[in-house]
Every structure is written in C-alpha cells, then in structure tokens.
Length: 355
Image (cartoon, rainbow, N blue to C red; front, side):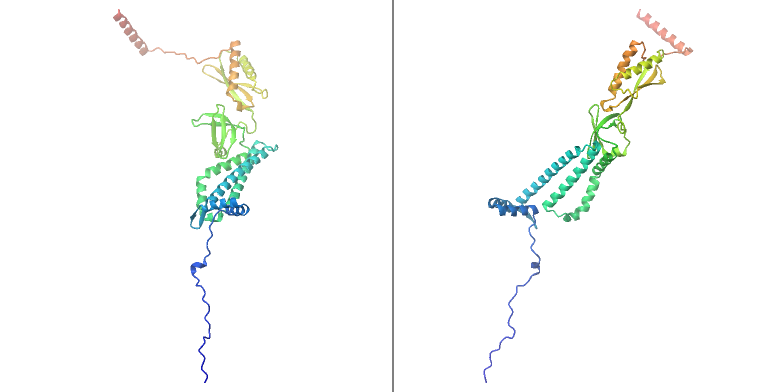
C-alpha cells in the first residue's frame, strides 16, 4: 500500500483584511478658511517662490477652533476684502450720483430720489459681492435668521420707517429741498424755515436765525405741514397799523399803500391792499396785505421796511399813531365823601403836630 499523503487543506487561508472601524468611515473634515484666501495663496505660491514662502509663513500662524482654522493670512485677506468693497461701493455710488445730477430732465426732487435708490442698490450689491468673496454660506445663518429679523424689526423699525417715508415724500413731491415750511419748536413758538436736505432719517430745516431743525420723515408724512412753496412760492404777508380816530382815513390808506409799494421785495402784481380791520380801544386798526415771492429771505425784514417808511409818511402828513389812553372817572357817594374827610382831617392833624 502506498503511503497516504499527508492531508492537505482544501480551503487555503484567505489573506487577512484590515478591520474597518465605524469611526473611520467618516471623512476627515478639511480645515475651513476663507475661499478667497485659499485661491490667492495657491496663485501666489505658484508664481513666486519668495512671496509664496512669506504667505506660507503667515498661513502657519493660525488658531484652530474645532474644524475652523483661522490664520494671519486669512485675517489680512478678510480685512483687505472688506476695505476694498467699502471703497468700491463709495466710489461707485459717488460716480452714480454725479451721473444722476447731470441728467437735466429731472428736477431736484427726482434727482434726490434717484440718488437714494442708486445708493441703496450699490451698497446692497457690494454687500453680496463681499459675502461671495469671503466664501460665507448664507444658509449657515438660517438658524439665526428668525432672531435676527426680530431684532431688526424692533430695533430699526423707526429707521426703516423714516427711510420709506422719505422716499414717499420725494415721489409725491409734497416736500422737496428748497421748500419753505412752518416749524414749531419745543416751546410752541412757530417759525418758518427752508428745507436744506432730505436724509435717510430726517429732514434738515434751517430757519432765518440759523437754527437747524431735524424733523423725522414720518412726522412730515403723518402730521399736518404748512408748506409755503408747495404749488407756488408767492406768500401774502400782513402788516398791522393803527391810526387815531381824528385822522383822515382816506389819506391814511393812501400812505399805507405807498409805504408797501416802496419796498423792493413787495410784488407789483398782485398789488398791495389795505383793509380796515376793527375799531380798537385807542385807534382804528388797519391791515396791509402785500405779496412776496422769496419767503426764504425772511418776512420780518419786509414788515420792518414798510413800517419805517410809513412812520415818516405819517409824520409828514400829521397823521397821529395813538398810544393806549385811559380816563378814570370816580363817582361821588356818601362813603367816598366820608373817607375823603377822614383823610383830610388826618393830614391836617399831622401838619399841626409838625408845627
């Protein structure tokens, strides 16, 4: 019998494979950084070895927060992008405003409205360009959008309300730069001023005494506004005059008209008029109505010119400007007579005592 060969394994042993752990299935998260910084770093490193080494040195100085890695080079790139976007937006908005101002077909209100719209569009575009260059994913902020929108709604509602109100005022042309409107201060005293500027938040109004009032745009849209220049700049002003009851009324009215026409700012058409307003305690009161077309230059100075001229005209024609007079009449009675006797007796007694 032939010797039986040694037993051979039917199945050869398969080569051992590395054991796959569950934690190794996850891909290694790359270090996150600024997208623009990565592109610039690669481009500079391939073009110039010296600058590439410097960039590499700056990139080595970094701080890591979990998967987030921020290097000094990233910080420099972010600061450069922010300043570059701001300068770009400022330059483009300024050029756009100059282009709008050169359009002669638009009036002042339309130019200001176009400037505001162009400025908003330019800054909004610059914001999204900066977001794209920095590689910020806006979807990552979706969690905070609700809280952020709520904060904007409560904190900046007045700002956005005034912005929209200013745009509406410019669209309907009810308020525009150069208009003269009535202004009431905190003490309740009413004055008038000229609109110098319509800003994002408020309207700047300058009075004749160079006081500048900043009135929120919402107040001008909601509250009643007295606009002297809305449809026409012609304004009628009044000058009040009183003359004596003994004066010649026809001559006094003629002199009042002459004094009003003597002012160079009083319009010839419509002409000045004189009305007798009332019989006062000491005088017959008149009102001189005259028209001007430049209220922004002041009203009180025109009234002063008319009154000064009228003063000399009244002097030359012997027309009296009365002042308040009071006549005191004492009715006699028994008690009054008794009081006078007592006073006279006391006075006589004091004189004898002195002697």
